[in-house]
Length: 493
Image 1 (cartoon, rainbow, N blue to C red):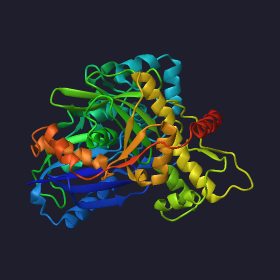
Image 2: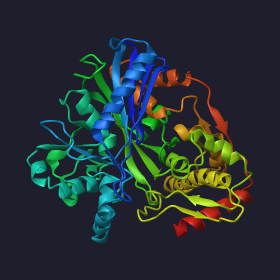
Image 3: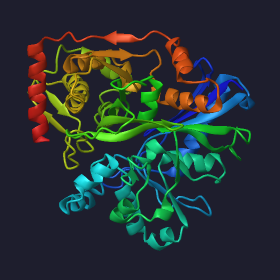
Image 4: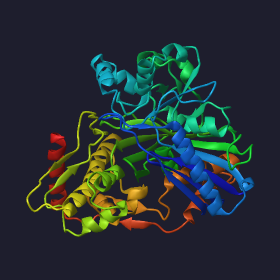
């Protein structure tokens, strides 16, 4: 039993990896699932469809690995964070489609709470701004609009982020749990006491009876029961939200080490050590992980749209049929021709926190082509991160020298080079870009005893393959020009 199963449940699809004790990928499965957009600014997922996508990816991964399920020592889960689902405890049936982290339907409710003066107190307790991004106002919206408050208060319903949903399904309904990192993304979790906060539950009108039990990131979360394709009794020993898992998978174990994941959005996390660091520049303070009694916190900046902007070029504008084609199209012109794309399709995240912002294209001329728009879109993804990194450096009081990257869009060399140029830091891309799933596997493997400690795990990870480095090479005057055009465009968005 020297294999780990990693479930990476993402915003647009579910990935399952089977890895051995040397962190080699033996099998991989992936299933995309449909996105629902009931109204402008609203994004939903069907919870049952998510579960079916996980089962399909699981079957593909096991078949590709060619190992019997009895060889699985442990399961790790990582998930899209903040996405909110409610289900009936008695039946496990979802009462509504899940409201996705990108959804902005609770913007007015957040604005009312901010106008009432709750922002600073909530940030001090949770590390988070009051924003539709997080789970609490989504829960309240579901209870109010579905008339479910009485049922929730009677304990008939359960709330979960997607990790809790998967734990419930994987254990045959026996478990209602989450980890500290996912809990810290709800606006209901006190960072300092590491527990649900009754005062916050009252403020956001969320019945305490809805909430799952909170465990460390490495813990005995439960055992499989009645899962198609898996024997009963496999322990689930590691859980982390996708960005925390990627930080762990990138081996950012020391304070000051940082990574950026280029997925549907772009997410920069900086390890700040054992004490939460409050942000004065629009970032989020979050739990990174907890192993035993050891806690690790991080500063985080989130850009809500990154890879999703390339999907928009593909699906919305029909520029190409495969997202990987964007690099060749963008390289066909020497620059963006003065075009700037602000990909604020779901508002602006850190450090701006403007849920009312909208996507913007400026600098169009008669000579603008698809290639210029493609290049400007990639540049917009990178320029969002420049705002976040500067805020991180201000909060930490020191410059960042190296940024580790992962996620699907990190395979784009043009984007990575431009990212290095506008950040002015070295970019390090590991051989394995699926750091999110890797992190879940590492946490689960530690929980199952595949590696005795993180030092042994780091030694195994270091042998996994060579990294690619991108160093800044754009002239300072050109960087200044890019940043000036970007800031002017953001002001308009």
